[in-house]
Image (cartoon, rainbow, N blue to C red; front, side):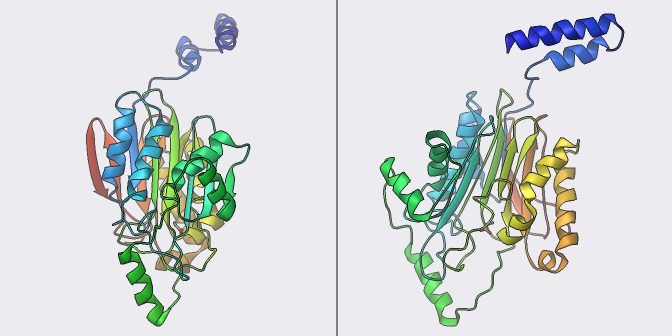
Length: 325
Ligand code: GLY
């Protein structure tokens, strides 16, 4: 790195002496890791307990990866959160099946899907990233891997979730929709003091989904995507639309083209709404994003979406702006 930097500087100096570059350009480009405006963490919905856990890592100079994992673990362990981890509503066969993914500042990624009995799928996803040559493990294989690595097998179906499922069984009306105005998947992205960017996403998926259904949340680029050179994005909402469009990847690519996180998200939501007008009118999608400059954005298709931001020592929840007014 030092040698590369020296060689870059000497080439730059040559260019300056040749008059093709300004000194300000040379200095800006020479900085290997420009000063961050972070740390900052942003999460879908009113997940202030999650952003608070992430902030504990960030405020002490910790790594964004550790922060997003710590944040995601909060709703995973919360029995009152019916869309994530323990307490998540089951599928239509009464099984709680979990999806999660995580990405670090080097572009490494890990993911689990259709994982049962493990309270913290986000930590299993991280272990897939760190301990295997693979990116994604599914179902029984993911469970075996988790158990072999010290995770405990637990019953994740709480009495409240079981009752909701039994109530649903009475009509068994299959409506593959997500809630507009209540907590859903957590997507969480962060930039730390050293400008390292990471993201995580974790969910129990759509309530009473078909057994085996996988949403966007464990799919890199759909539920979450992070590129340390540019920024990270994560989302909540109807997984099928996000799987078809790789929404989080698109947001990062729009930021790469120079858009702010907010403008990038709006561009992507308009594109999704243009491609799938009817589904977009009837469903919710909400994004959060952060860029390398430490700017953040959030936007949704519909009213009712909230997001939580921890920055400058303050943990706040905001009502998101939205497309369909
Ligand atoms: N966004 C969560 C899901 O569709 O499963």
